[in-house]
Image (tube, rainbow, N blue to C red; front, side):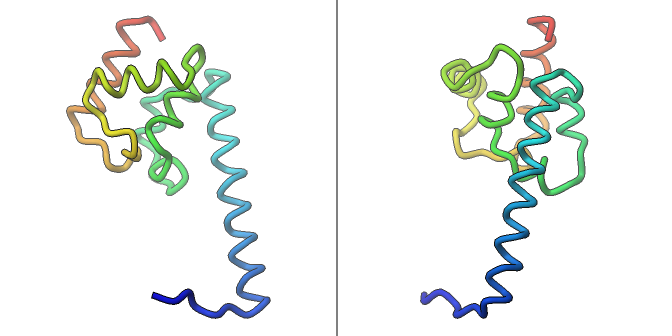
Length: 105
C-alpha cells in the first residue's frame, strides 16, 4: 500500500500533533518518576496518551525501575513486551498493582 501524498500544510499539522503527543508522554513519564502520579491513576486515565503508552515504558518511568527490571516484571506476570496500557486485562492490571503494593511503592 502506497503512502498518501500529503500537502505541506497536512504534513505540518501531523508533525505538530506528533510533537504534542511526545511532549504529553514525556510529561506523564516525569510525573510518574516524581511520584506525583501513581500507576493506578494511569490505569484510570481516559486520555489517549496514557492508554496508548507501552506497559514497558510505564514501568520504566516508575522510580527505581529500569529496562531490565521492567522486562523481568513483565515476564513474571506474563505480559507481552509489545502490550499497551489499554490492552491490559483486568487480571494483568491487578497483578501489576499487587506487585507494586507488595514492594511498598
